[in-house]
Figure 1 (spheres, rainbow, N blue to C red):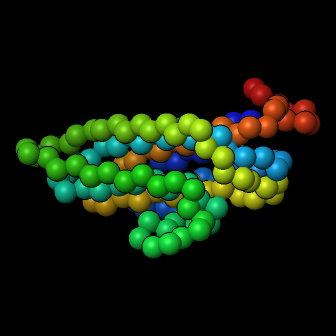
Figure 2 (cartoon, rainbow, N blue to C red):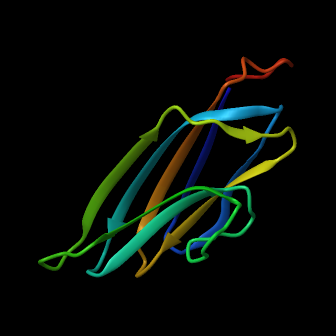
Length: 134
């Protein structure tokens, strides 16, 4: 099964997107993508996939974060810039249980517009109930 989380914002936002786990399973791979537009110098942004409803970007020893990715950009000239970051993590084994909710959190400074997508690939097969695909 594949779960997709997508969010876009120009301010930090906890719980920008969420999905409910449909069945007991395990996350076998994760693909992350962050696209940004920065209007000024000295910007930072990030995304976090988590079991918790609030972000844990600055918390040590958290047990709710599945994965977090942050980035920054220092322009040598003025003007808007855009960047893209992509990360794929294969060969994972993160247990998930039916009914758990997984959240996407966004973190940004200085009005950076961030578009973040996370794909969670699980070991389980297709859904056991009819699912509308289109």
